[in-house]
Each structure stands twice: as structure tokens, then as C-alpha cells.
Amino acid sequence: MEYISDFLPYLVNILAAVLLTAAAVLIWREKKAVRVGAAVAGSVIILAAGAAGIREVRERSAVWSLSPDYRHMLVLKYEETSGRVTTYRDQILWFARRSDQFPYTSGKDMKVQWLADDACAVTYQSPDDGNVHEYVMTYGDRGDGITTPYVYNLITGSWTGEGKNIAGWSIKTTADGLVVRSDGRVEETYAFEDCVQFGTLALALCREGLPQWTIVLDENCVAGEDDFLEDGGTISLCKVSMEKTAPMHFTRTEAPESFESDRGAAPDVAASGKTMAKEMREILKKDPALADFRSSQLGYLKVAYGQDDIFQAARLALEENDRQYTVNGIDVTRNITHMELLAGDKYDCLVQIDSTDVYSDPYSKDAEELEMTASYRLMRGEGVYLAYQVPYGTDGSSGLDAPAVKKELDTEGDPGYSYFVPGERQEEQ
Image (cartoon, rainbow, N blue to C red; front, side):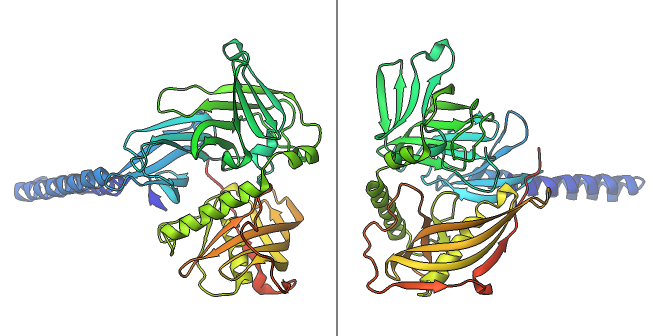
């Protein structure tokens, strides 16, 4: 945990110096020399701490923003010299836990906009390429808090804009991707691989890697058992821009006919797989040891493991992925039962993991046991692996050959392939 501002420890020292100085003056109020000495010493400490604190915040300033319902706080730290932005979560009073890092450096001016009570979009212009980028911090979910459904799947169907000001606007999922229609005339289509998810609530629609729109599940959304939103929920669409923008709300007017038919038509599986593999190679090419890389929800994972055992690397990747969701407050007990190499070799491979898992809420004592199967793409770097849990609609074996001989590992009952990850529960603001 860190202070939410680098100035706070200096402020604590200043307050302590003020109190000690005042106490010394009161205790020795009849001794002028002692009073003067205490006042001078206290003033020197206060000025020194203040100067050091100001220098510190000039080098790394903090950005705070309280959610509309006062339950969550956005905490960012911006490094002036490098332009690097670090995100923080689990804010408790004046402390927070370092979470992630923006993929691009940023200028000092950042636009902060809460699109929901638990979803905050940060828009910024990067000096790296001069383009506008966006990062969305999410603090909740619309399901059971255990599973992580894809927003793209949840919003399958047709949506129509609410209100007279956005008459003619619509959002629809099709075989080509997600279509945004403005004023009933202009259509923009975003393929599955151009939709980037943030947390469990937000989806950025990108064109050539640059975000154009952001979709957020409103607070009235509830994820149903079939991985669709239940009736009555609305979604918000907001333009990505450094200028002032307002989210537009949409109501679903046409529900998906069947889960299977939409799943089969939505993504370009091969293209998604190529994009995934390319991104992973570029990350390792830029930072082979992943020294400046941090794991993220629904993103790439850093696995600190330098040996050739791909099954152990996959097991560690699964655990690392679970640790990204501790913020949901759910305890996870995993017992891996079987692992199989589907494609590739020890340097770049796809591994399937079967497990029996127990998800439990430490407060309500509710528990659920599930049989799970997940596939992980693993690329080896210098003393580390870069891993990614392959989602639906992505060819995880892109660019890899099937193994000449079947390689699998029966791990049922092996304590080395079982683990427990306790959940964390955010305090209400």
C-alpha cells in the first residue's frame, strides 16, 4: 500500500512538527530561550518538509476523483519526466494499492469522466504518437462477482438511443462486428478484435488501435445465466475525445435469438489470434524481462518463472490471473485436474487447463463449485513468461504447430497443482 499522494508523508511530518513545537512552547512557556529554540527548530523542520514535499509532487503528481455515489475513488500518479501514469486500487482512507500502468505515456492534462458510478474513463494525449488514448477504471461488476463475462457477448442484440436528442442512434451486433449508427445514416463497424475490454464493465471501440467510442454497462444492468443482459438494463455510449462529451444511453429493442448463433457469427477467430500473438511478441521484443510490465485483468500476465516446465508455467499463469480479481472479494480455491499441450513448444505454446474450483464469499458464506476449462498462450522471455488467457473468438494456437507427440499431465490430487487465492473487499467511501 502507498499514500494516495506523495506529499502526504511530508504533510504528516509537518503536522507532527507543529504539534511538538506547540507542546514544547506550552511546557516551557516560562523559559523564553527554550520557547524560541523550539519555535526556530520547528519552523526549520516545517519548511524543510514542505520544500521536500513540493519537490516530490512536482516529480510525481497525484490525480484524484470521487465517484458520483461517493463509494469509489480514482487514484492515479503521473511522473512528470517520463509521462508514465500508474493506477491504484483498493483505496482505504489515504492509502491505496498499486494496480496497473497506462500502456502509453501521457501529457499532464488528462480528462477524467465518470460514465457510471463504478466506471471512470481517463482520456489523454500521448507524446509517444501524438494520438488520443483512453483507459477505463472499473470498480464493480454486473454479475455474481465470480465469473467474468465479456461485455461484447453481454450486449448482443440491437439497442436504440433514449431521448429526442439521440433519435436515430442505434447499436447492433452483427456477423461483421459491432455497428454504431448515428442519426440513422452514418454507420461505423468495429470487428470483435477491435473491441478492447476494461474490467468487467467497459468496452472501447477502436479504429487502427485508437479508441473512438466507449460502451459501459449502466448500474441497472444484470448479467443473466445465459451470458446476456437481463431485460431492463441500459448501456451508455460516449465519444472518446479530449473535448467535453456526454454519455448517451441506449435500451435494447431486439434481444438475441440464441446464444449459439450469435457466438458463431461474431468474431473473426483467425484474425483475433494473429493480433494476440503479434501483441505478445511486440511486448517481449520491447521488454524481454518484462521489468516494467504489470499483469492486468482481461489482459496479459507476467509470470516470474524461468524454467522449461510449461505445465508449471501455465499453473502459475492461472494463479496470476486469479490474483487480478481479488478486488471482487471472492475466495478462490483451484484444484487443477488435467493439463495438455495443444500446440507449440517450450518457447511459445498453448496449454489447456482443466480444474475443479470453489468460489466462496467470506462474508455471506455462499460457495459454488464449478468444473472449469481454460486455455493459456505462453511465450517465454528472459526469466519470465508472458501469458494470456485465450478468450472466446480467438485462435490461441495462431502461428503454432500441433505437437508431434501428445503431451499431457494428470494433476488430480497433486497438492503442487492446487492453490487458494483470498479475495479482497473494498471499503465503502
